[in-house]
Amino acid sequence: MGGDLLTLYKNRSKFLKILINLNSDPVFKKIKLIFEPGDALLKYCGFLLTSVVNKKIVNNKNILFVDSSIWVSSPWGIEKPIILNPKIKKEKYEVMGNTMYYGDCFGNFSLETKNKGDIIIFPGFGSYTISNFRNFHLYKKYKEYLIIDKKILQI
Image (cartoon, rainbow, N blue to C red; front, side):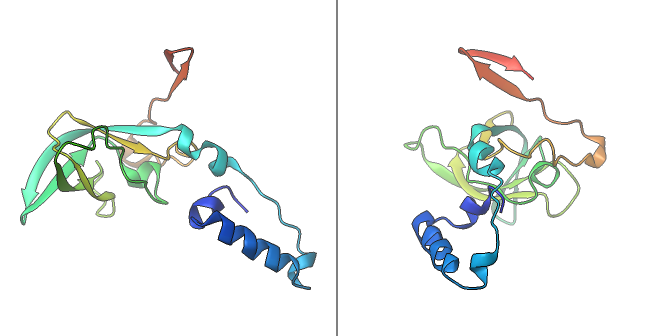
């Protein structure tokens, strides 16, 4: 069982009760479970910082185009972006990635007003983002940085 198992089961206590109940099942009891905790430990240690490269209104809908691709780097899903100032008025946006693939959509989010050059921060990019990276359109892998002792180092 992989580390993302914890994401699938948001109610962890309910999930643990299910595992305990399964352990008393005569058939399931004989099955050995192995947990690979990668995603559970590292997912929220990384963030994707992506810049708005274009903003359009299409059919009365705000569309933001960004300089990264959800399809290339995280096809399994995305967390809601981090809002740095919750008191600022929000607008609804559909955020699109930078490939020509129609499914390259980060999703619909309420964000602070965004313009070309603004940054959007997505959490949950700490594990498997680089190892699952697709070399689509010959894009280069994202730059990775590490913060140690208040210093930012490129990996």
